[in-house]
Length: 585
Image (cartoon, rainbow, N blue to C red; front, side):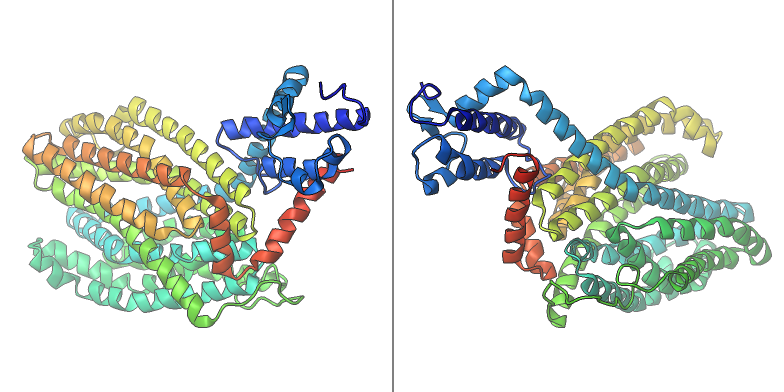
């Protein structure tokens, strides 16, 4: 046998066997799980090759160039392969348990990083939900006509304005997060300024739509009084386009930087002031007061952020608009036209993806008005939209967090870290979706009574909420998966999936079940379930097939990181790990 062969150093043989026992066990374990250990930013079989190059010469007469090429499937001697050595060592020492523990530590570390981004974003989403609920409640206190007109205006502004600005702003997420990952701070600042300019330009045609909402509603044969109230609301909400054009890119910027806490405190303070401002202005001047209060809240957030910038010391780390480089940047700068082209190429599909999903819910509400009992269906649709908006805070948090983490890791040239971030986020998404399903199923009656006491509406709401809970089983993973796609600069893939899932799968199913099979609003909800399921399956399939090394190379091209230098750093990281673990002589 090999260990008893003469002419070899026995201590070197034992050391070689021990090294392959640890690393070979790790390789077999992670490869069997289709998962690569992310700490070293390299595959375990590459680490095995490094071990071979340093230790195999002591135990076998193979040439060093041959030793460097060895992997677990190659033979050490005629009767013993590397994989067999790994299995023997694993059975004798139980290193598999150690490797599983190391994997758990990596997952916990990634969860901790994601929590640092996700918790402030969760607070932001919740206070934003409270802000919207406060405005709707104040409109309801003004009267039935004001509530109807205000609700129509809110839906119109969401479809034509806020969804467009939000989607365009999310287009900067891949470039900004990857720029922060490779420490290209000047590029991140340029992307922020250009996104703000792009949103300001997009606000011009949106403002024309808002000004002409009254004739648009007349063409749609809406009630003239309701259209008049909606027109009044939209005209006084025009300054909010300016506020959102500045605020939305800043929200993305702070997320990508991994420091959303200042934004959280500023938005929370603004919403805290929003409640009394809305009540006072709504009582004083009616519907225009509610619209003005919404604008003031967003401008207050900008003022609070400006105060934070003024109080913070201006350094390379804290500057937003004009970073001051303290050293020669290691990242190459891209031409201005190239950056603009890349930003627009990412922003347009991102905008389309967001709009397609937002518009589907509005179309669902419109379709409810054509059912046999439209008053009950529309009331239930309003409850369902409020419910999904609340449940959407969980997948939105995970989506934005994982987008920032994946972008940071790819920008830094750590594809294994990006894969870990995606895996942890999707696992959390499945856990969160199960909680949402239980809440929507077990608390459906109590939740319905929060909005109404009408028996017919309650009965339909109780029938629909379990279906909405099932939708969340698919919605949470697919929304999180879309965040992974954004972080890896594949916004066009997400837009294509949303297009076919919601409009080629969900819409036909919803219309057939609701009108052809006379299932009413339950049929529309089942159409939403079909759309979410198709979207989730497609997104998760794309992520499973992702070549993370290729995505890291694409990130290097996108943000100007030099690939040869990164490759050298990865090799240094591998050798450094072996030295720290005592595996490098």
